[in-house]
Amino acid sequence: MNTDRAIEFIRKNGNRFEQARLDHTLGLGFDPGSVMAGFSQLQNPDGGFPYADEKGFPSCLSNTTMALHTLLELELVNEKTTKLTIGFFKKMQKDNGTWEENEKVKPLNPPFWDMPGDEKTTIWLTADVADLLQRSGNPVPKKTIDYLAGLQGPTGRLKGFYHATWIALSVFGRKGHYNRKIWSGALAFLESEDISDWDASCIAWCLDSMKHGGVGKSSKLWDKLKSQLSATQEQDGGWPSEGGETMRPRDANSILSALMGID
Image (cartoon, rainbow, N blue to C red):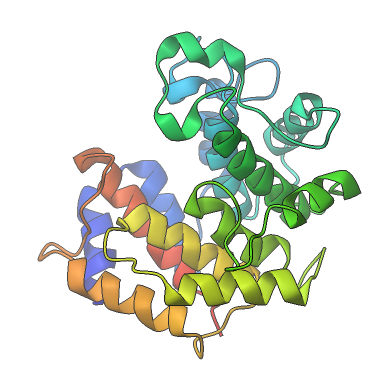
């Protein structure tokens, strides 16, 4: 892949927020105040972020995890908005240690991967929230870790969507709740899988989990993801996005941010 072209694409097409993300990735200065203003204006009183990022919509776990991923990427862990977000996750946790999508978003016709009451949705959300709590320095209940560990099958894949398996690289990687067996099983599964239908956002997310889980460039998974990025990068420097044209700068930023720091 051509990193310079990706940077140029974001500079040309990204909004002010995406420009700030890129500046942070490149080690340049950005204005945290302006970034936090956007988050705080959108955040609901309960600490969550609204479904579809539409002000006035009920808080959605999926959108809230995306917001916290970005806040942590920008190293804004000590901001009031970040702390309120973490508080929302703690309030939303079920007694069995899982996180289920907010039933209030069901009438809004969410996509299949974010459907309240669906076990596959609960699995990946539980893995993602656990990972984010761990990354932000907050404790993850043992019952949550035990639940996730019990989802891994003999192939190394966790039950449910692919998301849960690559998130497991971070949850059970070098920090927090290290578990070599689960980590290596998940990695072996992903190294063996066909990823030709993964879009840029999936690749970025997987790379990010690899980085935080200590998966280095010696892994076959790294080679596969890098080859896929090279094969699908477009002439303008961005990548196709299932989220449409407006999501392409965001996806490109996520890719660049994830690539930084992989050993």
